Amino acid sequence: MTAMEQYFARVQEQMRHLQATQWAGIERAGTLLGDALAAGHWLYAFGTGHSHLLAEEIFYRAGGLARGVPILDPRLMLHDHAIDATHLERREGYAQRLLAQYPVAAGDVLIVASNSGRNAVPVELALGARARGLKVIAVTSQKQSQAWPSRHSSGKKLGDVADVVIDNGAESGDACVALAGLPGQVGPTSTITGALIVNLIIVGGMEHALACGFTPEIYISSNTNGDSHNDVLLEKYRSRIRHL
Image 1 (cartoon, one colour):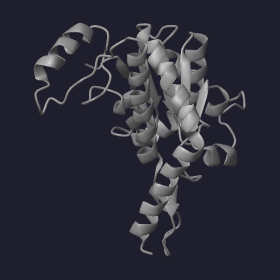
Image 2 (cartoon, rainbow, N blue to C red; image 1 turned 90 degrees about the vertical axis):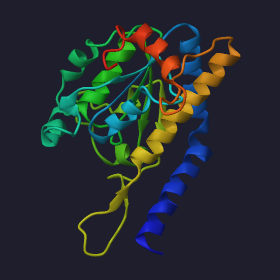
Image 3 (cartoon, rainbow, N blue to C red; image 1 turned 30 degrees about the vertical axis):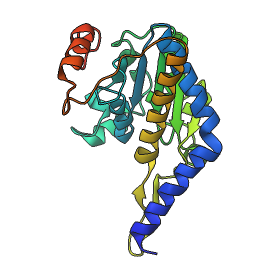
């Protein structure tokens, strides 16, 4: 089996893992989101490093929620000074200042993605959100989380402080294919399974909201006939969503 075939097989295996072992948690997360939407609340998402891609996944895209807001901080992303971001995500106290920049409120839902679940910023952001009355959904790797100690002074990891914990099935270290001659494995999987998890939650949340008699607002692709539809939503939420 080639390395590409191994990688493809491992991704498929992790997707089967989601369906076989994590489906109840994903359904519960979708129900929490649907109830929040039906009550007029919002979805937020956060991640550091490559996990910030899952926060962007909920935002301003075809078929996505208009009330989906990413919590983004360039200092915790990778496009500028990536090494600094690695150090900053371990710093206690930073998450509270970040969370204060968004109008989160009791009843909202927050997805926090962290493959390791061990760094201070994701842990503290989840704690701060729950203290404000948000429901927190963690997307993490149980293998990675169990293999390494927390970097937060409480000793807690992301999975310890969330309302719903969804295991993405990733290996410790994320990458999953060994190639002779390389010092570590290649082929990371957490972004692939993470994007699937996030969208499963959103699809399930929309379905549940509709069953509750509430119609969620969604974006339509601007590369089809979505411009006029989307313009109404952009005008409605531009002052509320800082990234529009």
